[in-house]
Length: 481
Image 1 (cartoon, helix red, strand yellow):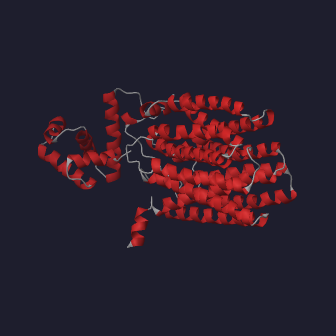
Image 2 (cartoon, helix red, strand yellow):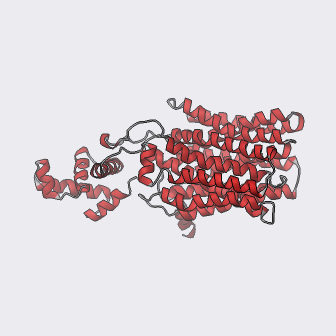
Image 3 (cartoon, rainbow, N blue to C red):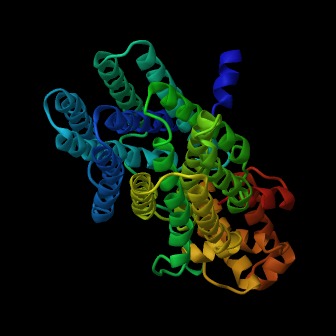
């Protein structure tokens, strides 16, 4: 009984939990190669190229998905192809370390990043069907698994130095990620992504280009985090102890994200929580860099990683929410999100590393950079505005009057409920009228049918939706996102 209760408390279905685990393991697998670029490359220029190459792989994977967005490949051969390519390039990386040069290492990092994030992107639709509060908890689970694996890996490397331990770790991670992905895809029937539900005609968002406000919002944060990442990497010499502290920050980020977002319910807003939690966290992480050369070195590094990974988890959650509101593809939305974020991360990394070369990292320089970071974060946080304005900026909703906006929202929820509970076309029409607060006599008059016929329809609607009165019906409709 206890084991059954524990399983019931776990977020999501078995397939969704395995998909979250596969994402966390793939992220850890890729990030180990990212960190090892700093360990194995001897000069700063090569290290900068390594970091850009790792993030560049994300850009390549997202661009490939964006180009192929109208073609849905068979999932099974793509999955096995990615696994084989990961195994070959993963082993080739250590061959490049032993016998090749810096250029070969950097080139392989591009390929490794491309394949790891292609695999992660393919896993995301497996999580797309779950809602609040399950989805934030699965994201926290993936992030926590990533952090624990990283801490354990670098702890083992500190205790048992040598390439053999790292190589064994990579092989084990690759196998574990493959097994989790295999289980998730098998339980989902090897379907890449189900066709999104079409919203009612009057609730469909107007199609328009991605507005500049949202590029500013995401770009400001990723630019600041890219710069913070580069500056934190240069505070003290690279070592296993420093890397362990980084991923303790990642573990703290998983816990913080779970506390802030893990209890969200259908209809709750995510943007206010982002403003109240992630904005001050990001700003504090940048301010603490100025104290990294004093006694707060490890606190500064861990806090910077915590802030970046908390925002990463939020960014992933926002991608799912946006895809659902747009009735669109999680895969395509994730690709667009990565195409927005990655160039700013790369620009921040280049800017931070350039500052380390061109200028002395004095307290005065950090103060000036903190002012710039504050202005960027304020613009990226408060320019978009509240949830309503953010939704308009993303192009998720039409700019309607309050009454028409409410009507469209009700129609969208009713359409989803009708599809979910198998209502007939006539029952779906009656449901919309019930959702607008009309009673049986009013519906009978407007639809020119008898009151008894209306009551029969209402009884069938209640039975199919598992409710017994109007209050429960309204509550059930509020659950539809």
